[in-house]
Length: 413
Image (cartoon, rainbow, N blue to C red; front, side, top):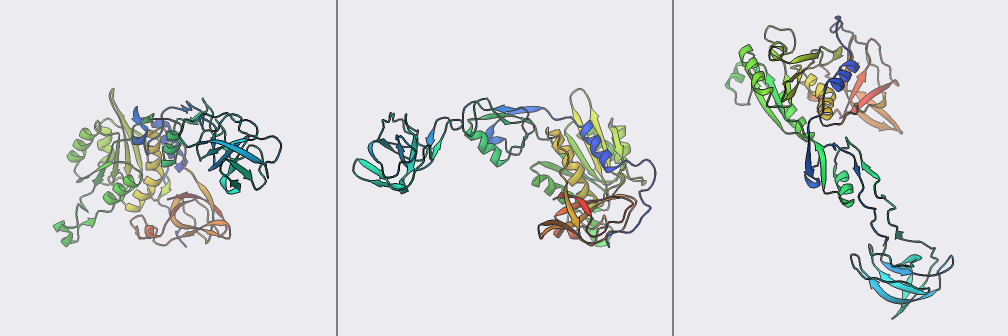
């Protein structure tokens, strides 16, 4: 069993996971756009549709090394053709074939006029100035026709398209050299907490009053793996320090991500200091486990818009909330407004009910053609050791015991 029934999180006023997701989508505006050369646009999102300026292929060409032929009928087997020249890929040789003639051609070479088919060299018996076809050969074989992949003015890519390696290759082939993309967000991560050691050499670690910082490395690595640059700062639990930090950073960054200081403790200054600095609260506290005291707010003046995602302090809650809400926020800022991609998988063992909806770290696998999920032990919000094995987050409904064989929603990590 993974979890037990708990009254924690049952208080009134909590919003649901779906409500929190919808609020982030509604309140987040994409960043401004910029023009980039295509080769420098990897991991960006398109801000404009792209239509093909040319046909692909731009001219009819040979798909193989062989011979371009001109013949009548259905089959060229056993026919002999006069060879009148050669066409290389990229060459500008011009030929017009007559019946019974052939041109030696190489892959990518431009098809000469009146070509009816191409014979690959493996089925050709070549002599000094003629060839004979040794196997059945149909008309129109091994010809890449102009525009067969993409026609001019066809929609190549839509606004919001993620520019992966494959997308850049496809656009390059279509002659696209510059694209308009959404800017990537400038992100600062603020690690709060007097108990967090800023390094392994912190002398106070010897006094057993400090804990090693997992959240800073976690968020830095998460941002790197999602192709974002990030600045990580550690700040103490002091109201004046937190106030000053928000005052300085709210106009320097597009996104502030904090860990800790968002609950109701005497030293939880993130929310009151954010509100004191002109941030507008969009939600605070979600009926979920882990990560109930999640805080989302934004600041806006005439020149700048800054979003604040206040994460809990426990590292498992930080990890889960970034995989769900952090990714959603950062993608939406870049014009990718698709909701999270959930998959259905079959649970392998029972899970007890809880009053909060949960994100449980599990191992996903294929079993006889089925996608299955296996719960891991040590699910408490301060524990991270099971992330060595976890490859998915599974969304478990509230107030219901789940049985082996039940279908659940899965978010791949």
